[in-house]
Length: 102
Image 1 (cartoon, rainbow, N blue to C red):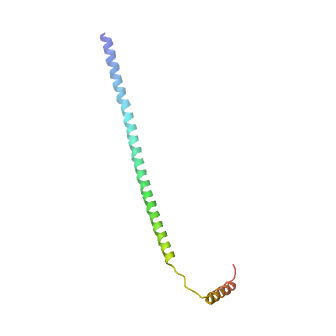
Image 2 (cartoon, helix red, strand yellow):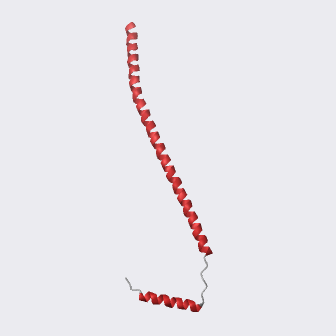
Image 3 (cartoon, rainbow, N blue to C red):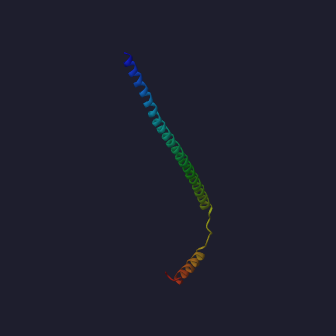
């Protein structure tokens, strides 16, 4: 009986030592997982910055478009009589004929 208790104690000691060695591997895995989490957080921050920059450029484009539309609506062409328009077209066609074609 004493031998049996001694063998069980020895097995328990060996199992404890094996658990300590196995525990160091799990600590390495935990460290790797933490590194992966840090890397993924950095990537998400970078992506969020890019998204906010894109949203800002879209807002700038919308502002520019609205300004162009306002300018277009505010533009009033000069009024010409029929004779003035006829003279302008004739001069334009004469200049167009004089320029050499490339």
